Image 1 (cartoon, helix red, strand yellow):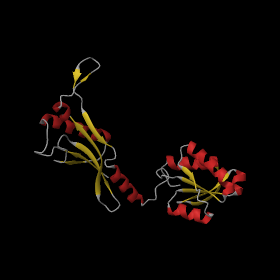
Image 2 (tube, one colour; image 1 turned 90 degrees about the vertical axis):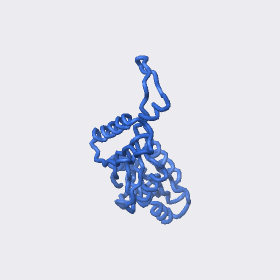
Image 3 (tube, one colour; image 1 turned 120 degrees about the horizontal axis):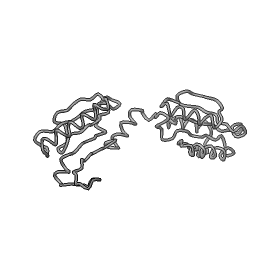
Image 4 (spheres, helix red, strand yellow; image 1 turned 30 degrees about the vertical axis):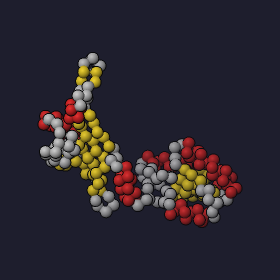
Length: 224
């Protein structure tokens, strides 16, 4: 990831030189106060103001611009924008253009490529999939899923009715981080038979134990 401060792009720009200087200094001060390493790009700013941009390297080494922040003193002046301050005086606002992700499609494309679809637990669209062995365990699976969802986790029940081996294989192909097999023994003991993509079979765990392990892994941004 590369952070850059981009300056005035020569003739194809608008606004007074002193406003550009003020905007440049404001962005550099912000970067310095954050303590971030950055590079300057003379002439790389937008036509109406300088910017900080963050370029992310994709899975094959290409750099793409994603996040940008621009301080714009020019447009408020050109449009004569004003606001009434707390003391009753009329002041000119400073405009800040902010794109946290840039192009969402580009950002998610880079993210998916980076992980090859195998998202860590904290990021995975589905964090836990419950696999009932038969219809007899479906109610318990739904109850556990509701508990997990209420606790803030992204959980779902495999409702395909397929044999257990097929459910497990489907979850593996879809790269679900955590699967929980539920047979009659798990129903009777109030437990889940847990397997994770990174650490394999964890054995039978109670629902509170599963929640604790999920929370620890998410908090630490670790594999589960």
